[in-house]
Length: 203
Image (cartoon, rainbow, N blue to C red; front, side):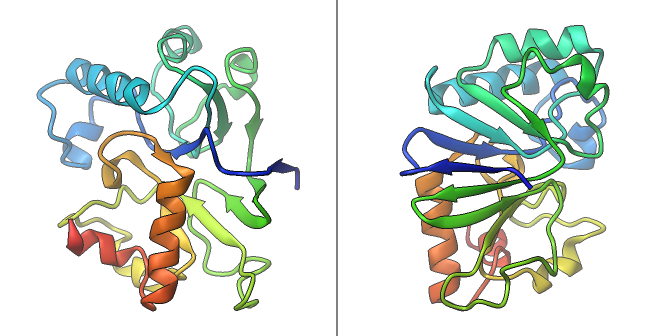
């Protein structure tokens, strides 16, 4: 598995499940938008308000619906170098290699010495989960977790490790989340012996 290494987490962001152009996601995830056009506009504005042109964004899958031409149009409006971790709805990745700064099935990061596994799906078992001092963290998407939300996978979330976090837009203000924010939340989960379920009730 390829590893990307960063001395610090400055200028580093994560997101997932934007679903640009996906009409049905409005109902499926109960998103607070009147139309897919409004959703796309808000997601783009939120993204660019958080991310600068020289930042790096790891998108953990389900970027957009539509043909490659439309996806390229969306990417052209977004700040940052975007690295895509493929989700179950990401089609034709071979036609998008010129717009993303890399396309992967999964990826390992090392940020200031902390190992972080990136995958579209949350794992219940992976290398590095049983080293209590230097556990490998995992960031994921797919579940569309949100405060007061429900879903087919909701009951399984109780099994997540404290060092896992959902970076999907539904849980993070419909915007990419910074490494510092991710780090704060995971450290809180570890220190308080809780997991991502905490944020489904607290906000």
